[in-house]
Amino acid sequence: MRIALSSLVVLGAVIGCGGAGNDAGVPGEAHLILAWDGSREPATLDGHVEPYQPGWLIDSFIADPLVVLGPNGDYIAGLALDWTSSEDARTWTFTLREGVSFQDGTPFDAAAVKYNVERILAPETQSAEMAAHVGPVARVEILDDQRVVLHYEVPWVTVLDAFRRVPIWSPTAAEKWGLAEFHRHLIGTGPFLLDEWVPNDHVTLVKWSDYGGWNAISRGGPAHLDRVTIRFIGEQAVLGNVVKTGDAHIAMNVPSTYIEDYRDSDDFRLITGFQAGSGLSMTMNTRNPPLSHLELRQALLYGVNQEAINELLYDGNFLVTDGPLNEIHPCYWEGNADYYPHDPDKAAALLEGMGYVDRDGDGIREAHGVDGVADEAKLELRWTVLHYSEIGEAVQSQWRDLGIDLNVEVIPGPVQLERVNQRNFDLMYERQRSPDPMLLDMVWNSAHDVVGGWAWGGFVDAELDATVGQLRTVADPKTRCEIAKRAQKIIMDNALMLPTLSEPIFYAVSNRVVDFELSSEGQFFFLHNTRLEP
Image 1 (tube, rainbow, N blue to C red):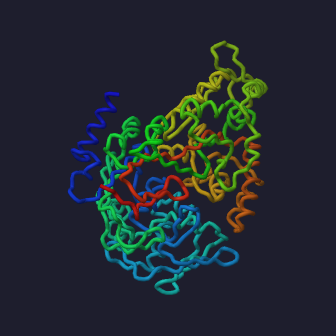
Image 2 (image 1 turned 60 degrees about the horizontal axis):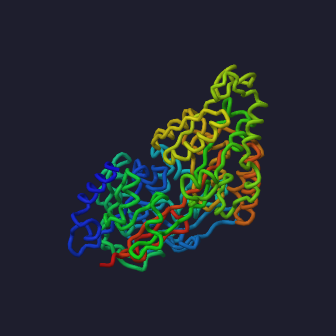
Image 3 (image 1 turned 90 degrees about the horizontal axis):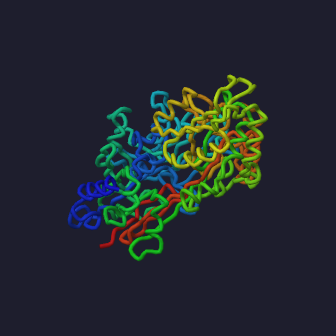
């Protein structure tokens, strides 16, 4: 607690003597202070390279995308006013806004779109996630300044979902600074300019006075806010209290233990955003024993009581997830709920049937005749996460009762990707967030089991590959969901992943903040229209 309180003192000193209440001490300036969980700070602010969504959120304030995912889940106009696709979804044509310039004066046109697509797909960019979303573009054709055509090698039905994420950068600035330095000199067409980034501390954005409201969310013209500072807060106690103490106007990812402080308050409000996707899931490395054994994977699923973990850790405020897509996903399969109910007796029977028994009486099972495992080897597994280690610790306790020794380790994002590329993990945290079922192809198609790909589990199955592969060729939303449900059944039949919980995004917001609006994905929000009242 002494550490948490001292962090609050330091934060208040940095923001200003009066905290957020005086807009950082600059008279007449509307200065919004956002507090973020420090573990979510991006490694780079260049969203063409950065594979994680917090970086893309920061980019969205600096660079308008071609299309916007609105609060109601619809795709609406961004830098593109209109779009059409061929019947086979191999050709996509975008009609662009006229009269738009980047923040450095470079005109925004079809050539700029072409540059950005080719930059993402260029091998030297080393884009992983964004390149996977953009997909196999064969060529980019410029029809005129306001029309650009993307020609795909294969049908690509998720173009809109991809390009609502892609920041469109100034070609002039990107060329000037190069890949190594551009992330500190980002230039887009959005309402805010990047002022500075001090790693492990803050990002500051300032209003671009020439912004023309080039986004269907914007009500036109420059932003109301003069300055936005995003503070990265390492202490959960500080993050939970920072709005209440007046040292920030908005806190994102407020720990669940603090949300009651803001609920039903006269001075603050609690906003909850949900995230369609995979939830906080754990991918199992099925390449080698013992996780190559289906019986072990099934035992692990039967051995977890998610409801108890949710109540223990989060007072029931998270969502229990029981399959590859969480229950708020449009393509969730209801059959997930029936597959692996908590059943420790069944889990124990599966382990004993494999040959895992505890003969030496130390509480941890050893292998006796388990194929591919040395006799008397302890049943030990690693649980590797970026955050939410407390979930792993709760599972650790539940599995310990089954005779499984689980080691929980927390690593940063770059180390995670390195471990994945080296295939050096047992259970690895992997979260994908999208209302489109394409994420099932990204994670479960063995064709993507490559360096930079997202099929981490190493499972190869022709039926699963063919099923999720259809998500790249079928455009009809209803049919896509039927395909996704078939894929979820195959994944659960083979117990390829361990579902845990789905994290809502809790925002603590001061009542001084007006017109703060979430996207339909709870981890994204808009600041174009946000104002601060006195």
